[in-house]
Image (cartoon, rainbow, N blue to C red; front, side, top):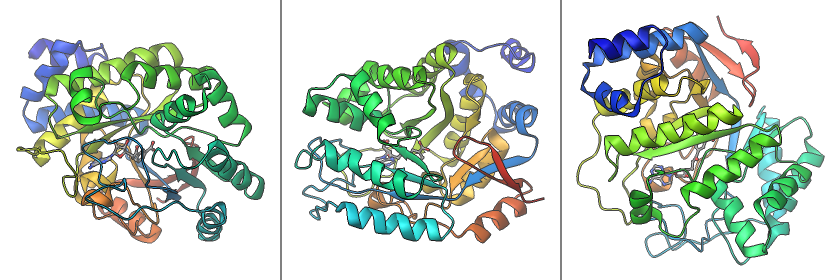
Amino acid sequence: MKEIIKKIENDKRVTFEEAIKLYELDMFTLGKLADEKRVQRYGKKSFFNVNRHINPTNECKDICKFCAFSANRKNPNPYTMSHDEILSIAKEAVSHGAKELHIVSAHNDKVGMDWYLGAFKKLKELYPHVHIKALTAAEVNFLSESNGLSYEEMVDLMIENGVDSMPGGGAEIFDEKVRDKICKGKVSSKNWFKIHELWHKRGRKSNVTMLFGHIESRADRIDHMIRIRELQDETGGFNAFIPLVYQRENNYLKVENFPTSQEILKTYAISRIVLDNVPHIKAYWVTSTINLALIAQEFGADDLDGTIEKESINSAAGAKSAKGMKMDEFIHLIKDSGFIPVERDSLYNELKVYE
Ligand code: V47
């Protein structure tokens, strides 16, 4: 273990086997190693943005076992917003200062491509200064298959219709065996990466998530991180890695053991160390709880996502995020935890430092 620690302290890259071993370290040693990496990059700064999540439809042709958001037997409330409804939510959010619209939908085969892309086009025309982060690789794959378009054509259409960056959803766990058990039929790991690679090659940025704390092993998590590190070496297009803690309510994935807070914090810390080429580690307070997200700042995380305003995907599965968080409260919590809140834009340019 001493050799591994030395390697990390000397900014050398850890291997798959070494990364798994890091879970055996005590919390303080691991936390200190990750914190050193965070401090090297950002000191005590913690980033957040003022954003609004919009989930325009929950009608989905796919069935992911962990998902409580899509309309199904456990959640028989299908909805699909009209463009006018989406625009009116955006209008309100922008009037409250939202600088990013994070738009993610289910895979709805009752509406066409124009419903998906037309909304972005209208939003961009109305609010050219607002960043549109939209369409997970899973949605891109769904739209490509259902419209007979290549990924290249899809990516070009997204750009033409005003999408600025891609969110990190749909990554789940890249190991094919686990993926088959939790979300068979969804975009494959290979195609998830293909879509992000194409997006990066158009000079655009994206994020990448990891859904953990269900049936995956520690080795599956490290494998997930190493696959990300490999693409990032080639393209440099990922802005942030976002570990999502599995929420257990209202879904079909039966899980016996949930991760402890220690396991969650260790996973943040290890991701900071393994993903030496991904600039930001996001502690998404929605799935970690705000309390743990604040502690994660001392375990390598430098970003807490944003105020969100309304959240439907994770709150459907039990997260306490349905109403987002007020900006004053967010700033206050970050300050009280000993960090410097920095409001950022979607591409991590600093907008305001709250010293
Ligand atoms: O892909 C679904 C996850 C994701 C559950 O890019 C669940 O900045 C936990 O991708 N428990 C959507 N997670 C959210 C997402 C995201 C969130 C915040 C920021 C960004 C970003 C992206 O939510 C899905 C899926 O992995 N999810 N069900 C659940 N039961």
